[in-house]
Length: 241
Image 1 (spheres, rainbow, N blue to C red):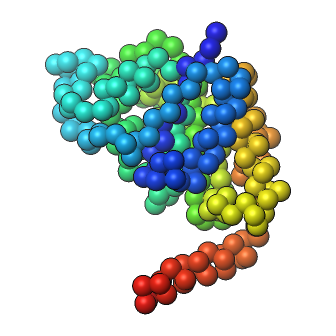
Image 2 (cartoon, one colour):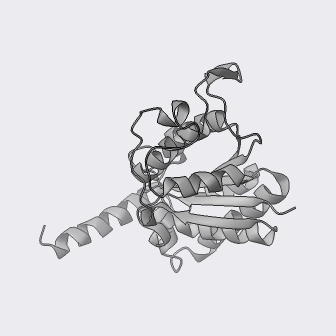
């Protein structure tokens, strides 16, 4: 049985972003494992912020009062066996586009409060528990810059009755744009991302080995910072700053 896999990319850069470089490899692996993958790019969608009106809970249960592209995405989410959020780190968390999308999943919940893992949560309208994974990159060197993002996504799983099945976290992500400089190391990262897609579909989880391989250091911290600052100095010089 093929696994319906929904990948939502919340980067403002869409297919031009570093996050998509990991996503592309992940999707390739998932498809090789037999998954049917649907990729959605939020930078191409019109989704307004949640109004906090609770109409979707009281007057039109399960249906949002706002008429925009979110309705289509909620339908996709309902049928997904695997849901993957691909978002770069913005101000220590997910992007604004990603946050608005997650906020607007409230219609998939019921207003009652129940206990999940002995913690107060709203029950989900969906019957099955899906697998949930995260793909992310950031411009800082350390892996702990993803801590807030990962915690947010784990909490989201509790509401959606989903199982957190792993993540692909790429620190000093911009390095991936320069394969001619660190070809061997970058190749290993991308291969691990592809393998992770296969693992999630076939085994239901991304292995620790694949997660660690994607997050592996490509360039030493001080060398990376020097290169990054050199790049930004050049950009500023172009406009006479």
